[in-house]
Image (cartoon, rainbow, N blue to C red):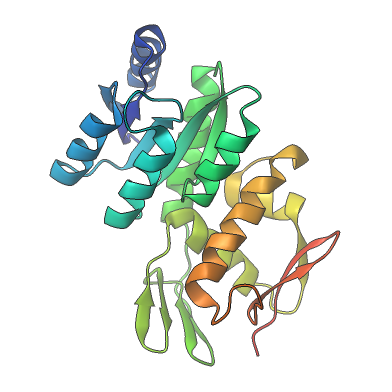
Length: 226
């Protein structure tokens, strides 16, 4: 079983201690903090493999922590959100989070999400495909646009790779949730939408008028390079 170096950021002492103990029992190495400031210092000093980040934090909130981490690194981020806080969750995904889990969370569910993210990091086949100025190197896990490297998070890269594997085909959100996030709940489709928006902002000349990733209203997305 894969052991992950986890940075856990949760201000509630009982929740933080419970998750830290549970994830440690699952074999992970966990460093836990109560504030966003401490978490950012840790990311700068010692890069974790994955961040588990509560949205509601004192001082710098989780969404802002997510944004600041994204300026530093593309490491995976899973949000912990309170039930019913849909707006915070959507804003967090748009800020660059890869996944979210609603509290109270079963440690086994969180562990499964962590391992799914790590599998996404490790799964890629050796392949280099060009679509005009856009080059997707599956072996090197590298994307370039007009010879400039595009920095994608692991989830953004996995979603783009999945779309690239099926050029011209419409992939519905349920399929993409299973293929990229290992989710089965259609209610989580906002993960797909937010991730597509982030990818478009990085690879599309005009994100509002995409030429690579097209929305097929009522169905999903199609990768149709010019």
